[in-house]
Image (tube, rainbow, N blue to C red):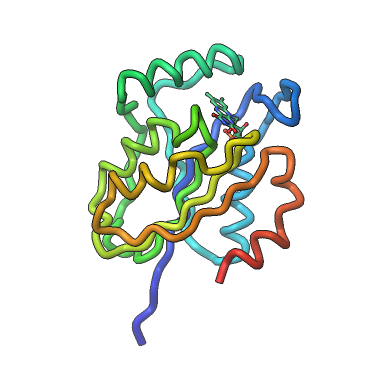
Length: 170
Ligand SMILES: Cc1cc2nc3c(=O)[nH]c(=O)nc-3n(C[C@H](O)[C@H](O)[C@H](O)COP(=O)(O)O)c2cc1C
C-alpha cells in the first residue's frame, strides 16, 4: 500500500497583535492554534518555521520591520530545517497575512526545498485581507507544485474554527 505522508509547516508570531480592532497580547499565535487543530484532525507531522532574529513584541514595531523586509524582498534566516522533506507528499502551509502576503520567512522556507510534484495546501489567519496575494506568491515560488485552494480564518475566530476546519480537510 502506498501511504501519503503530510506535514504542517507554519509560521506564527506570539506577542502583541491586532485582533478585532484592538491590540491583544497573544501567548500563542493565531496561526499556531490553527496548525495544532489541523494536526489533531489529520495526524500530520508539525514543523514550526522560526526565524533566527526574533520580531519585536510590539505590534507596530513588527509591522515596520515586516514592511522593510517585504520592500527589500528579504529572506530572513531560519533556525532549523525539515529532516526529510522527500518523505512528504502534502504540505499544509500556515502563516499570518503580513502586508497582503506571507511573512518573508515563509519565502525563505519555500525556497529551501524542492516541492516539485508535491501538494501545498495554504491556510492563513488575518484581520480582513484573507489570503491576500499569498496563493499567487506560493505558485510563483513553487511552479511545479500543486497549490490547493487555501483557507483564511480571522484571528478572532481561530478558537472556534473546528467545524470550518473539519469541512475544509478532505
Ligand atoms: C507585520 C504584520 C502585518 C500584518 N498585515 C496584515 C494585512 O496586510 N492584512 C490583514 O488582514 N492582517 C494583517 N496583519 C494581522 C495578522 O495577519 C493577524 O493578526 C494574524 O492572525 C496573526 O497571526 P499569528 O498570531 O499567527 O502571527 C498583520 C500583522 C502583522 C504583525
